[in-house]
Length: 99
Length: 487
Image (cartoon, each protein chain N blue to C red):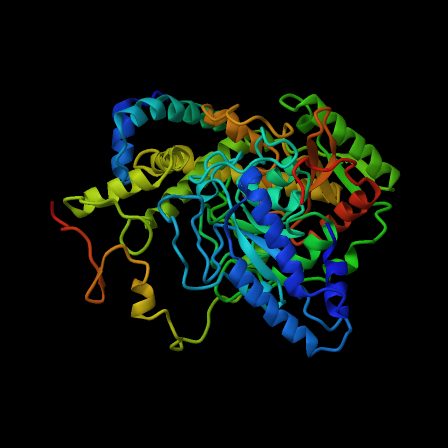
Protein backbone atom coordinates (compact mmCIF):
# COMPACT_ATOMS: atom_id res chain seq x y z
CA UNK A 1 0.00 0.00 0.00
CA UNK A 2 1.48 3.39 -0.97
CA UNK A 3 1.87 5.72 2.00
CA UNK A 4 2.24 9.40 1.24
CA UNK A 5 3.85 12.12 3.29
CA UNK A 6 0.34 13.40 3.98
CA UNK A 7 -0.58 10.01 5.45
CA UNK A 8 2.52 10.19 7.63
CA UNK A 9 1.49 13.61 8.86
CA UNK A 10 -1.97 12.28 9.75
CA UNK A 11 -0.52 9.26 11.60
CA UNK A 12 1.90 11.52 13.48
CA UNK A 13 -1.02 13.66 14.60
CA UNK A 14 -2.88 10.60 15.87
CA UNK A 15 0.27 9.43 17.68
CA UNK A 16 0.88 12.87 19.29
CA UNK A 17 4.15 13.27 17.47
CA UNK A 18 5.34 16.49 15.88
CA UNK A 19 7.66 15.39 13.13
CA UNK A 20 9.84 17.49 10.87
CA UNK A 21 9.63 17.67 7.11
CA UNK A 22 12.88 15.74 6.88
CA UNK A 23 11.44 12.95 9.09
CA UNK A 24 8.30 12.84 6.94
CA UNK A 25 10.41 12.41 3.83
CA UNK A 26 12.46 9.58 5.41
CA UNK A 27 9.61 7.79 7.17
CA UNK A 28 7.11 7.67 4.29
CA UNK A 29 9.00 5.20 2.07
CA UNK A 30 10.28 3.20 5.07
CA UNK A 31 6.84 2.71 6.57
CA UNK A 32 5.40 1.98 3.14
CA UNK A 33 8.04 -0.73 2.64
CA UNK A 34 7.25 -2.32 6.02
CA UNK A 35 3.49 -2.20 5.37
CA UNK A 36 4.01 -3.83 1.96
CA UNK A 37 6.13 -6.50 3.64
CA UNK A 38 3.52 -7.32 6.30
CA UNK A 39 0.82 -7.58 3.62
CA UNK A 40 2.31 -10.98 2.69
CA UNK A 41 0.02 -12.25 5.48
CA UNK A 42 -2.85 -11.89 3.03
CA UNK A 43 -1.70 -15.04 1.25
CA UNK A 44 -2.80 -17.08 4.29
CA UNK A 45 -6.46 -18.07 4.55
CA UNK A 46 -7.45 -17.24 8.12
CA UNK A 47 -11.23 -17.16 7.64
CA UNK A 48 -11.75 -20.07 10.05
CA UNK A 49 -9.11 -19.06 12.61
CA UNK A 50 -9.82 -17.58 16.04
CA UNK A 51 -7.35 -14.76 16.76
CA UNK A 52 -4.81 -15.28 19.58
CA UNK A 53 -5.57 -12.05 21.38
CA UNK A 54 -3.06 -11.34 24.15
CA UNK A 55 -0.04 -13.30 25.27
CA UNK A 56 -1.58 -15.48 27.98
CA UNK A 57 -1.35 -19.23 27.82
CA UNK A 58 -3.68 -21.66 29.58
CA UNK A 59 -1.91 -21.71 32.95
CA UNK A 60 -1.62 -17.93 32.94
CA UNK A 61 -5.33 -17.57 32.20
CA UNK A 62 -6.02 -19.86 35.14
CA UNK A 63 -4.01 -17.87 37.68
CA UNK A 64 -6.05 -16.43 40.53
CA UNK A 65 -5.80 -12.69 39.94
CA UNK A 66 -8.38 -11.36 42.36
CA UNK A 67 -7.37 -10.27 45.86
CA UNK A 68 -9.15 -8.88 48.90
CA UNK A 69 -10.15 -5.24 48.43
CA UNK A 70 -8.00 -3.81 51.21
CA UNK A 71 -6.38 -0.41 51.54
CA UNK A 72 -2.65 -0.71 50.85
CA UNK A 73 0.08 1.90 51.29
CA UNK A 74 0.76 3.83 48.06
CA UNK A 75 3.44 6.23 46.83
CA UNK A 76 1.96 9.31 48.44
CA UNK A 77 1.78 12.82 47.00
CA UNK A 78 5.38 13.90 47.64
CA UNK A 79 6.97 10.89 46.00
CA UNK A 80 4.47 10.87 43.12
CA UNK A 81 5.35 14.50 42.33
CA UNK A 82 9.06 14.09 42.97
CA UNK A 83 9.99 13.54 39.30
CA UNK A 84 7.40 15.87 37.76
CA UNK A 85 8.76 18.44 35.29
CA UNK A 86 6.47 21.17 36.64
CA UNK A 87 4.76 20.38 39.97
CA UNK A 88 2.66 23.10 41.55
CA UNK A 89 0.58 23.15 44.74
CA UNK A 90 0.45 19.36 44.98
CA UNK A 91 -0.50 18.93 41.33
CA UNK A 92 1.07 18.29 37.92
CA UNK A 93 0.95 21.66 36.12
CA UNK A 94 0.52 21.64 32.33
CA UNK A 95 0.16 24.34 29.67
CA UNK A 96 -3.39 25.52 28.96
CA UNK A 97 -5.57 22.77 27.57
CA UNK A 98 -7.46 24.86 24.99
CA UNK A 99 -4.97 26.49 22.63
CA UNK B 1 34.64 -15.68 34.76
CA UNK B 2 34.30 -17.40 38.11
CA UNK B 3 30.99 -19.18 38.44
CA UNK B 4 28.31 -18.15 40.91
CA UNK B 5 28.74 -21.42 42.77
CA UNK B 6 32.44 -20.91 43.42
CA UNK B 7 32.03 -17.18 44.16
CA UNK B 8 29.40 -18.06 46.75
CA UNK B 9 31.60 -20.69 48.26
CA UNK B 10 34.55 -18.29 48.49
CA UNK B 11 32.41 -15.58 50.03
CA UNK B 12 30.74 -17.96 52.49
CA UNK B 13 34.07 -19.51 53.57
CA UNK B 14 35.69 -16.12 54.11
CA UNK B 15 38.14 -16.63 51.26
CA UNK B 16 36.85 -13.35 49.84
CA UNK B 17 34.03 -10.92 50.65
CA UNK B 18 30.98 -9.52 48.89
CA UNK B 19 32.72 -6.12 49.07
CA UNK B 20 35.87 -7.35 47.32
CA UNK B 21 33.79 -9.15 44.69
CA UNK B 22 31.65 -6.07 44.05
CA UNK B 23 34.76 -3.85 43.94
CA UNK B 24 36.34 -6.03 41.29
CA UNK B 25 33.17 -5.89 39.16
CA UNK B 26 32.88 -2.11 39.61
CA UNK B 27 36.55 -1.62 38.70
CA UNK B 28 36.14 -3.71 35.55
CA UNK B 29 32.90 -1.92 34.59
CA UNK B 30 34.56 1.50 34.96
CA UNK B 31 37.76 0.49 33.23
CA UNK B 32 36.05 -1.07 30.21
CA UNK B 33 33.24 1.45 29.76
CA UNK B 34 35.26 3.74 27.48
CA UNK B 35 35.78 0.79 25.14
CA UNK B 36 32.33 -0.80 25.43
CA UNK B 37 29.80 1.82 26.61
CA UNK B 38 27.93 -1.11 28.19
CA UNK B 39 26.86 0.80 31.30
CA UNK B 40 24.72 3.92 31.49
CA UNK B 41 25.17 4.10 35.26
CA UNK B 42 27.71 2.44 37.55
CA UNK B 43 26.63 2.69 41.18
CA UNK B 44 29.86 2.24 43.17
CA UNK B 45 28.57 3.82 46.37
CA UNK B 46 25.25 1.95 46.45
CA UNK B 47 26.79 -1.38 45.46
CA UNK B 48 29.53 -1.23 48.11
CA UNK B 49 27.05 -0.24 50.81
CA UNK B 50 24.86 -3.15 49.85
CA UNK B 51 27.88 -5.50 49.73
CA UNK B 52 28.83 -4.50 53.27
CA UNK B 53 25.30 -5.38 54.41
CA UNK B 54 25.55 -8.76 52.72
CA UNK B 55 28.98 -9.38 54.29
CA UNK B 56 27.55 -8.56 57.72
CA UNK B 57 24.66 -10.99 57.17
CA UNK B 58 26.96 -13.75 55.96
CA UNK B 59 29.16 -13.38 59.06
CA UNK B 60 26.13 -14.16 61.21
CA UNK B 61 25.44 -17.37 59.31
CA UNK B 62 27.08 -20.76 59.67
CA UNK B 63 29.90 -21.34 57.17
CA UNK B 64 27.76 -23.64 55.14
CA UNK B 65 27.14 -22.43 51.60
CA UNK B 66 23.87 -24.35 51.30
CA UNK B 67 22.23 -22.22 53.96
CA UNK B 68 23.73 -18.91 52.78
CA UNK B 69 21.73 -16.58 50.54
CA UNK B 70 21.20 -18.03 47.04
CA UNK B 71 23.05 -15.13 45.39
CA UNK B 72 24.90 -13.76 48.44
CA UNK B 73 27.44 -11.22 47.19
CA UNK B 74 26.95 -12.04 43.49
CA UNK B 75 27.33 -8.90 41.33
CA UNK B 76 24.72 -8.40 38.62
CA UNK B 77 24.07 -5.80 35.91
CA UNK B 78 20.51 -4.71 35.10
CA UNK B 79 19.17 -3.51 31.76
CA UNK B 80 18.16 0.12 31.99
CA UNK B 81 14.47 -0.59 31.39
CA UNK B 82 14.03 -2.44 34.70
CA UNK B 83 13.35 -0.27 37.75
CA UNK B 84 15.89 -0.22 40.57
CA UNK B 85 15.14 2.22 43.40
CA UNK B 86 17.90 4.79 43.88
CA UNK B 87 19.23 4.36 40.36
CA UNK B 88 18.20 5.77 36.99
CA UNK B 89 15.87 4.08 34.50
CA UNK B 90 16.36 5.77 31.14
CA UNK B 91 15.35 2.95 28.76
CA UNK B 92 18.11 4.36 26.56
CA UNK B 93 15.83 7.33 25.85
CA UNK B 94 16.08 11.08 26.23
CA UNK B 95 12.41 11.19 27.21
CA UNK B 96 13.26 9.48 30.53
CA UNK B 97 16.87 10.70 30.83
CA UNK B 98 17.93 10.42 34.47
CA UNK B 99 14.45 9.44 35.72
CA UNK B 100 14.64 7.65 39.07
CA UNK B 101 11.82 5.21 39.75
CA UNK B 102 10.43 5.30 43.29
CA UNK B 103 10.15 1.50 43.53
CA UNK B 104 11.94 -1.74 42.71
CA UNK B 105 10.80 -4.15 40.03
CA UNK B 106 9.73 -7.48 41.54
CA UNK B 107 12.77 -9.20 40.00
CA UNK B 108 15.00 -6.66 41.76
CA UNK B 109 13.25 -7.21 45.11
CA UNK B 110 13.87 -10.92 44.73
CA UNK B 111 17.52 -10.51 43.69
CA UNK B 112 18.22 -8.20 46.63
CA UNK B 113 16.47 -10.59 48.99
CA UNK B 114 18.79 -13.35 47.69
CA UNK B 115 21.84 -11.18 48.42
CA UNK B 116 22.74 -10.09 44.89
CA UNK B 117 24.60 -6.79 44.36
CA UNK B 118 23.35 -4.54 41.53
CA UNK B 119 26.47 -2.79 40.20
CA UNK B 120 24.88 -0.76 37.44
CA UNK B 121 22.33 -0.18 34.69
CA UNK B 122 23.17 -1.37 31.20
CA UNK B 123 22.78 0.42 27.90
CA UNK B 124 20.11 -0.75 25.45
CA UNK B 125 18.25 0.23 22.31
CA UNK B 126 15.70 2.93 23.12
CA UNK B 127 12.70 1.31 24.83
CA UNK B 128 14.19 -2.07 23.85
CA UNK B 129 13.48 -1.40 20.16
CA UNK B 130 16.39 -2.60 18.10
CA UNK B 131 18.72 -5.45 17.23
CA UNK B 132 22.06 -3.63 17.21
CA UNK B 133 22.07 -1.13 20.09
CA UNK B 134 22.44 1.66 17.56
CA UNK B 135 19.11 3.06 18.76
CA UNK B 136 20.31 4.06 22.22
CA UNK B 137 20.14 7.82 22.80
CA UNK B 138 23.38 7.48 24.75
CA UNK B 139 25.59 5.91 22.09
CA UNK B 140 25.95 2.30 20.96
CA UNK B 141 27.38 -0.54 23.01
CA UNK B 142 30.42 -2.13 21.32
CA UNK B 143 30.83 -5.87 20.89
CA UNK B 144 33.69 -7.08 23.16
CA UNK B 145 34.77 -9.56 20.46
CA UNK B 146 35.27 -6.76 17.92
CA UNK B 147 34.47 -3.19 18.88
CA UNK B 148 33.78 -2.24 15.24
CA UNK B 149 30.74 -4.52 15.44
CA UNK B 150 27.36 -4.36 17.12
CA UNK B 151 26.68 -6.37 20.29
CA UNK B 152 23.14 -7.14 19.14
CA UNK B 153 20.08 -5.75 20.80
CA UNK B 154 18.24 -4.66 22.52
CA UNK B 155 19.92 -5.99 25.71
CA UNK B 156 23.36 -5.29 24.17
CA UNK B 157 24.84 -3.69 27.29
CA UNK B 158 23.91 -6.67 29.45
CA UNK B 159 25.33 -9.11 26.88
CA UNK B 160 28.57 -7.14 26.51
CA UNK B 161 29.00 -6.79 30.31
CA UNK B 162 28.74 -10.57 30.70
CA UNK B 163 30.89 -11.37 27.66
CA UNK B 164 33.64 -9.03 28.85
CA UNK B 165 33.74 -10.78 32.22
CA UNK B 166 32.55 -7.75 34.21
CA UNK B 167 29.68 -9.67 35.84
CA UNK B 168 28.76 -13.38 35.78
CA UNK B 169 25.11 -12.56 35.10
CA UNK B 170 22.87 -9.74 33.91
CA UNK B 171 19.16 -9.20 33.37
CA UNK B 172 17.71 -8.23 30.02
CA UNK B 173 14.25 -8.15 28.52
CA UNK B 174 13.11 -10.10 25.48
CA UNK B 175 10.17 -8.92 23.37
CA UNK B 176 11.29 -10.38 20.03
CA UNK B 177 14.74 -11.77 20.78
CA UNK B 178 16.33 -8.97 22.81
CA UNK B 179 18.00 -11.37 25.25
CA UNK B 180 18.80 -14.26 22.90
CA UNK B 181 20.08 -12.33 19.85
CA UNK B 182 22.67 -10.23 21.76
CA UNK B 183 23.64 -13.36 23.71
CA UNK B 184 24.32 -15.03 20.37
CA UNK B 185 26.32 -12.08 18.98
CA UNK B 186 28.38 -11.75 22.19
CA UNK B 187 28.97 -15.47 22.81
CA UNK B 188 27.04 -15.89 26.07
CA UNK B 189 23.99 -17.77 27.35
CA UNK B 190 20.65 -15.96 27.08
CA UNK B 191 17.33 -17.37 28.24
CA UNK B 192 13.82 -16.03 27.60
CA UNK B 193 11.43 -17.84 29.93
CA UNK B 194 7.85 -18.85 29.19
CA UNK B 195 5.39 -15.92 29.06
CA UNK B 196 4.12 -15.69 32.64
CA UNK B 197 7.20 -17.31 34.25
CA UNK B 198 8.84 -14.08 35.47
CA UNK B 199 7.08 -10.97 36.77
CA UNK B 200 7.28 -7.86 34.58
CA UNK B 201 6.25 -5.53 37.40
CA UNK B 202 8.78 -2.70 37.14
CA UNK B 203 9.86 -3.55 33.59
CA UNK B 204 9.01 -0.63 31.32
CA UNK B 205 6.39 -2.08 28.96
CA UNK B 206 7.05 -2.36 25.22
CA UNK B 207 4.85 -5.16 23.82
CA UNK B 208 2.80 -6.42 26.74
CA UNK B 209 1.73 -9.72 25.17
CA UNK B 210 5.38 -10.46 24.24
CA UNK B 211 7.65 -8.97 26.93
CA UNK B 212 9.50 -11.28 29.28
CA UNK B 213 12.52 -10.61 31.51
CA UNK B 214 15.42 -12.95 30.78
CA UNK B 215 18.90 -13.78 32.05
CA UNK B 216 22.26 -13.43 30.30
CA UNK B 217 25.12 -15.45 31.76
CA UNK B 218 28.60 -16.71 31.04
CA UNK B 219 27.64 -20.19 32.22
CA UNK B 220 24.34 -22.03 32.02
CA UNK B 221 24.40 -22.95 35.72
CA UNK B 222 24.55 -19.24 36.56
CA UNK B 223 21.56 -18.45 34.36
CA UNK B 224 19.72 -21.27 36.17
CA UNK B 225 20.64 -19.85 39.59
CA UNK B 226 19.28 -16.40 38.72
CA UNK B 227 16.14 -17.72 37.04
CA UNK B 228 15.48 -19.78 40.17
CA UNK B 229 15.36 -16.57 42.21
CA UNK B 230 13.28 -14.40 39.87
CA UNK B 231 10.74 -16.94 38.56
CA UNK B 232 7.27 -17.45 39.96
CA UNK B 233 3.91 -15.88 40.63
CA UNK B 234 3.75 -12.20 41.59
CA UNK B 235 0.58 -10.44 42.73
CA UNK B 236 1.79 -7.28 41.01
CA UNK B 237 1.75 -8.93 37.55
CA UNK B 238 -1.53 -10.62 36.71
CA UNK B 239 0.08 -12.43 33.76
CA UNK B 240 2.41 -14.45 36.01
CA UNK B 241 1.15 -18.02 36.25
CA UNK B 242 0.63 -20.17 39.29
CA UNK B 243 2.93 -22.92 38.06
CA UNK B 244 5.50 -24.42 40.46
CA UNK B 245 9.12 -23.40 39.82
CA UNK B 246 11.24 -26.57 39.55
CA UNK B 247 14.78 -26.91 40.91
CA UNK B 248 16.71 -25.76 37.85
CA UNK B 249 20.18 -26.61 39.24
CA UNK B 250 19.08 -30.20 39.85
CA UNK B 251 18.15 -30.65 36.19
CA UNK B 252 21.43 -29.42 34.70
CA UNK B 253 23.43 -32.64 34.51
CA UNK B 254 20.70 -35.01 33.43
CA UNK B 255 21.65 -37.42 30.67
CA UNK B 256 20.20 -36.23 27.36
CA UNK B 257 20.24 -39.66 25.70
CA UNK B 258 16.97 -40.16 23.88
CA UNK B 259 15.94 -36.49 24.01
CA UNK B 260 14.28 -35.66 20.70
CA UNK B 261 15.51 -32.44 19.08
CA UNK B 262 13.37 -31.07 16.28
CA UNK B 263 15.10 -29.45 13.32
CA UNK B 264 13.25 -27.58 10.59
CA UNK B 265 15.30 -27.83 7.40
CA UNK B 266 13.42 -24.88 5.93
CA UNK B 267 14.83 -22.67 8.68
CA UNK B 268 18.39 -23.64 7.75
CA UNK B 269 17.93 -22.55 4.13
CA UNK B 270 17.74 -19.20 2.40
CA UNK B 271 18.81 -16.06 4.24
CA UNK B 272 21.14 -17.86 6.64
CA UNK B 273 24.84 -17.01 6.68
CA UNK B 274 26.96 -20.00 5.58
CA UNK B 275 29.22 -19.95 8.61
CA UNK B 276 26.23 -19.85 10.96
CA UNK B 277 24.67 -22.78 9.10
CA UNK B 278 27.91 -24.74 9.36
CA UNK B 279 28.25 -24.07 13.11
CA UNK B 280 24.62 -25.04 13.76
CA UNK B 281 24.93 -28.24 11.67
CA UNK B 282 28.02 -29.15 13.73
CA UNK B 283 26.08 -28.53 16.92
CA UNK B 284 23.27 -30.78 15.69
CA UNK B 285 25.86 -33.53 15.08
CA UNK B 286 27.35 -32.90 18.52
CA UNK B 287 23.93 -33.31 20.15
CA UNK B 288 23.55 -36.60 18.29
CA UNK B 289 26.88 -37.74 19.69
CA UNK B 290 25.62 -36.81 23.14
CA UNK B 291 22.71 -39.18 22.60
CA UNK B 292 19.97 -36.88 21.35
CA UNK B 293 17.72 -38.02 18.55
CA UNK B 294 17.21 -35.57 15.67
CA UNK B 295 13.72 -35.42 14.16
CA UNK B 296 12.41 -33.32 11.30
CA UNK B 297 9.76 -30.80 12.24
CA UNK B 298 7.81 -28.33 10.18
CA UNK B 299 6.93 -24.83 11.35
CA UNK B 300 5.03 -23.74 8.25
CA UNK B 301 4.13 -20.26 9.52
CA UNK B 302 7.59 -19.36 10.86
CA UNK B 303 8.36 -17.49 7.64
CA UNK B 304 5.57 -15.02 8.49
CA UNK B 305 6.96 -14.35 11.97
CA UNK B 306 8.51 -10.96 11.23
CA UNK B 307 5.37 -9.69 9.49
CA UNK B 308 3.17 -10.77 12.41
CA UNK B 309 5.62 -9.46 14.96
CA UNK B 310 5.98 -5.98 13.48
CA UNK B 311 2.22 -5.53 13.49
CA UNK B 312 1.59 -6.77 17.03
CA UNK B 313 4.71 -5.35 18.69
CA UNK B 314 4.29 -1.90 17.15
CA UNK B 315 0.55 -1.82 17.93
CA UNK B 316 1.24 -2.61 21.58
CA UNK B 317 4.17 -0.18 21.68
CA UNK B 318 2.10 2.69 20.29
CA UNK B 319 -0.32 2.16 23.16
CA UNK B 320 2.28 1.57 25.91
CA UNK B 321 4.40 4.55 24.92
CA UNK B 322 1.43 6.91 25.04
CA UNK B 323 2.26 7.40 28.74
CA UNK B 324 5.40 9.36 27.89
CA UNK B 325 3.81 12.77 27.54
CA UNK B 326 5.93 15.13 29.65
CA UNK B 327 3.32 15.50 32.40
CA UNK B 328 4.28 13.33 35.35
CA UNK B 329 7.98 12.49 34.96
CA UNK B 330 10.87 12.64 32.54
CA UNK B 331 11.59 15.21 29.86
CA UNK B 332 9.17 18.02 28.87
CA UNK B 333 9.65 20.32 25.88
CA UNK B 334 9.83 23.98 26.90
CA UNK B 335 7.53 26.86 26.02
CA UNK B 336 4.73 24.97 24.31
CA UNK B 337 1.70 27.28 24.06
CA UNK B 338 -0.90 24.60 24.79
CA UNK B 339 -1.16 21.06 26.14
CA UNK B 340 -1.37 19.31 22.80
CA UNK B 341 1.69 21.13 21.48
CA UNK B 342 3.52 20.17 24.68
CA UNK B 343 2.71 16.48 24.13
CA UNK B 344 3.77 16.57 20.50
CA UNK B 345 7.01 18.51 21.00
CA UNK B 346 7.99 16.49 24.08
CA UNK B 347 7.58 13.27 22.15
CA UNK B 348 9.31 14.66 19.06
CA UNK B 349 12.35 15.84 21.01
CA UNK B 350 12.30 12.94 23.50
CA UNK B 351 11.97 9.93 21.18
CA UNK B 352 14.57 8.77 18.66
CA UNK B 353 13.76 7.82 15.03
CA UNK B 354 13.19 4.07 15.55
CA UNK B 355 10.74 4.64 18.40
CA UNK B 356 8.85 7.21 16.31
CA UNK B 357 8.79 4.85 13.34
CA UNK B 358 7.34 2.03 15.44
CA UNK B 359 4.85 4.22 17.29
CA UNK B 360 3.61 5.50 13.92
CA UNK B 361 3.46 2.03 12.40
CA UNK B 362 1.53 0.79 15.44
CA UNK B 363 -0.81 3.77 15.28
CA UNK B 364 -1.38 3.07 11.59
CA UNK B 365 -2.21 -0.64 11.97
CA UNK B 366 -4.66 0.13 14.77
CA UNK B 367 -6.30 3.10 13.08
CA UNK B 368 -9.91 3.12 11.92
CA UNK B 369 -10.43 1.03 8.80
CA UNK B 370 -7.14 -0.85 9.09
CA UNK B 371 -7.58 -2.78 12.35
CA UNK B 372 -9.07 -5.93 10.75
CA UNK B 373 -6.67 -5.93 7.82
CA UNK B 374 -3.52 -5.74 9.92
CA UNK B 375 -3.90 -6.27 13.65
CA UNK B 376 -6.65 -8.89 13.63
CA UNK B 377 -5.05 -10.67 10.70
CA UNK B 378 -1.73 -10.81 12.55
CA UNK B 379 -3.39 -12.21 15.67
CA UNK B 380 -4.94 -14.97 13.56
CA UNK B 381 -1.60 -15.93 12.04
CA UNK B 382 -0.18 -15.81 15.56
CA UNK B 383 -2.74 -18.47 16.53
CA UNK B 384 -1.49 -20.59 13.62
CA UNK B 385 2.09 -20.21 14.83
CA UNK B 386 1.07 -21.46 18.27
CA UNK B 387 -0.52 -24.48 16.57
CA UNK B 388 2.74 -25.08 14.67
CA UNK B 389 4.64 -25.32 17.95
CA UNK B 390 2.00 -27.50 19.61
CA UNK B 391 2.29 -29.95 16.68
CA UNK B 392 6.09 -29.82 16.65
CA UNK B 393 6.24 -30.60 20.37
CA UNK B 394 4.19 -33.75 19.82
CA UNK B 395 7.18 -35.02 17.82
CA UNK B 396 10.09 -33.57 19.77
CA UNK B 397 11.17 -32.28 23.18
CA UNK B 398 12.78 -29.09 21.89
CA UNK B 399 13.29 -27.35 18.56
CA UNK B 400 16.83 -26.37 17.54
CA UNK B 401 17.44 -23.36 15.25
CA UNK B 402 20.13 -20.74 14.76
CA UNK B 403 19.59 -17.77 17.11
CA UNK B 404 20.48 -15.08 14.57
CA UNK B 405 20.99 -15.30 10.80
CA UNK B 406 24.51 -13.81 10.94
CA UNK B 407 27.34 -13.23 13.42
CA UNK B 408 27.79 -9.66 14.72
CA UNK B 409 27.59 -7.13 11.87
CA UNK B 410 29.38 -3.78 11.48
CA UNK B 411 28.01 -0.53 12.87
CA UNK B 412 26.01 1.33 10.25
CA UNK B 413 25.53 -1.74 8.06
CA UNK B 414 21.74 -1.91 8.42
CA UNK B 415 20.86 1.33 10.14
CA UNK B 416 19.19 2.95 7.12
CA UNK B 417 17.15 -0.13 6.25
CA UNK B 418 14.68 -0.89 9.06
CA UNK B 419 13.29 -3.99 7.34
CA UNK B 420 16.76 -5.58 6.94
CA UNK B 421 17.36 -4.85 10.62
CA UNK B 422 14.04 -6.45 11.61
CA UNK B 423 14.97 -9.66 9.77
CA UNK B 424 17.69 -10.25 12.39
CA UNK B 425 14.91 -11.46 14.64
CA UNK B 426 13.52 -14.05 12.23
CA UNK B 427 14.46 -17.03 14.45
CA UNK B 428 13.65 -15.46 17.81
CA UNK B 429 10.27 -13.71 17.46
CA UNK B 430 8.29 -16.96 17.14
CA UNK B 431 8.96 -17.74 20.82
CA UNK B 432 7.51 -14.39 21.92
CA UNK B 433 4.52 -14.68 19.61
CA UNK B 434 3.68 -18.15 20.92
CA UNK B 435 4.85 -17.65 24.52
CA UNK B 436 7.27 -20.60 24.58
CA UNK B 437 10.66 -20.38 26.31
CA UNK B 438 13.93 -20.18 24.37
CA UNK B 439 17.64 -20.20 25.12
CA UNK B 440 20.65 -19.16 23.05
CA UNK B 441 23.86 -21.15 23.51
CA UNK B 442 27.26 -20.29 22.00
CA UNK B 443 28.10 -22.95 19.38
CA UNK B 444 31.34 -21.85 17.81
CA UNK B 445 33.23 -18.99 16.20
CA UNK B 446 33.16 -17.69 12.63
CA UNK B 447 36.34 -17.32 10.57
CA UNK B 448 36.51 -13.73 11.89
CA UNK B 449 36.46 -15.06 15.47
CA UNK B 450 32.90 -13.92 16.05
CA UNK B 451 30.56 -16.04 18.17
CA UNK B 452 27.64 -17.96 16.69
CA UNK B 453 24.64 -19.04 18.75
CA UNK B 454 22.18 -21.89 18.52
CA UNK B 455 18.66 -21.55 19.88
CA UNK B 456 16.61 -24.18 21.67
CA UNK B 457 12.85 -23.66 21.99
CA UNK B 458 10.74 -25.83 24.27
CA UNK B 459 7.12 -26.32 25.29
CA UNK B 460 5.61 -24.00 27.93
CA UNK B 461 7.37 -24.25 31.32
CA UNK B 462 10.23 -26.40 29.96
CA UNK B 463 13.02 -24.06 31.15
CA UNK B 464 14.61 -26.90 33.16
CA UNK B 465 14.92 -29.04 30.03
CA UNK B 466 16.32 -26.16 27.96
CA UNK B 467 18.88 -25.35 30.67
CA UNK B 468 19.83 -29.04 30.82
CA UNK B 469 20.32 -29.20 27.05
CA UNK B 470 22.33 -25.96 27.05
CA UNK B 471 24.46 -26.99 30.01
CA UNK B 472 25.37 -30.40 28.60
CA UNK B 473 26.36 -28.83 25.27
CA UNK B 474 28.30 -25.95 26.82
CA UNK B 475 30.25 -28.33 29.09
CA UNK B 476 31.31 -30.56 26.20
CA UNK B 477 31.76 -27.77 23.62
CA UNK B 478 32.97 -24.60 25.34
CA UNK B 479 33.90 -21.63 23.14
CA UNK B 480 37.59 -21.85 22.29
CA UNK B 481 38.31 -18.11 22.07
CA UNK B 482 37.77 -15.13 24.30
CA UNK B 483 36.66 -11.55 23.56
CA UNK B 484 39.40 -9.03 22.79
CA UNK B 485 37.98 -6.66 25.39
CA UNK B 486 37.90 -8.59 28.66
CA UNK B 487 38.32 -7.84 32.35
